[in-house]
Image (cartoon, rainbow, N blue to C red):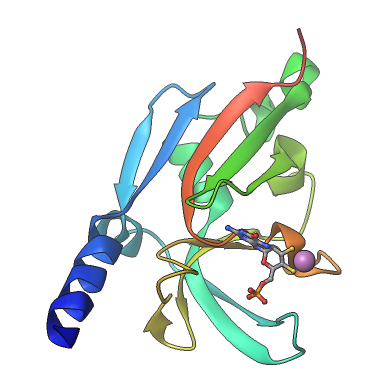
Length: 155
Ligand SMILES: Nc1nc2c(c(=O)[nH]1)N[C@H]1C(S)=C(S)[C@@H](COP(=O)(O)O)O[C@H]1N2
Ligand SMILES: [Mo]
């Protein structure tokens, strides 16, 4: 019974997909294995309890570029009113303006983490979690990320 539950949990983790949609040229459905094939980076950060952890995964900007979001030289004019709305399995949502994610605007590299301290993120946290190292509190470190929607913040 326990083994069965464990196998199902592992299966659910590997089957989970991250959807990238909205103002993109190429909508994406990414699985953990797709992210593993992309360039990996890591951040050492302190969590809410002050404990240091090493999170590893893919820079959020890389994912947006893969989807054809307006970044870099294209992130100007009306595109500066665009944002990424990130939604989790529990319905929690957080928002980043594109300019908060783009390296031409900031040195902060926002991470879509898939691993913590050398292990895949556990159920309830993963398989995907956003890590924003320079935020003073981890409220936007959204766990169990399921989708990223790019949209214009205007009527
Ligand atoms: N999916 C999801 N992510 C979430 C939250 C949530 O309720 N749901 N809470 C946020 C808040 S308010 C905080 S302080 C941190 C807490 O992270 P921790 O559970 O690793 O301590 O997770 C953030 N990520
Ligand atoms: Mo929080």
